[in-house]
View 1 (spheres, rainbow, N blue to C red):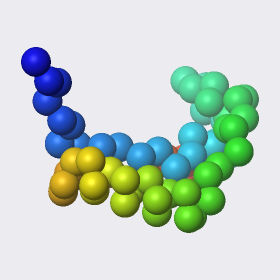
View 2: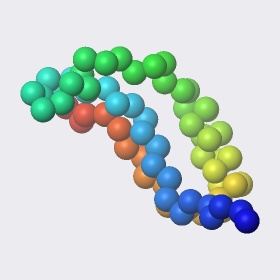
View 3: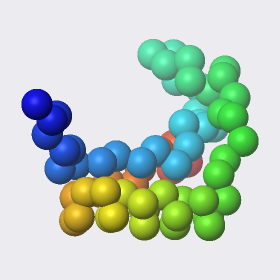
View 4: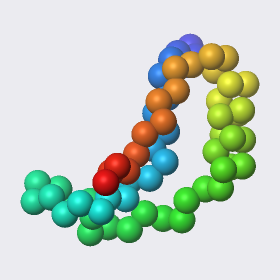
Amino acid sequence: MESPLPSFISLNITNECNARCRHCNSWQSKDPPRPSVEDWLRLVDDLAVWLGTPHVIVAGGEPL
């Protein structure tokens, strides 16, 4: 039996943060190198081929 395909995809562009909140220590860790814009576009194209038209959420990072 095949697994159902996802209908929602979340792409976190980065987890970097320049805030130093007491409740979170994410600012202490470094993100690995980021994919290029071309890599992200290729990923989105591949997802469209695999899933059709899922809901895609693009998020990540602290907006400060």
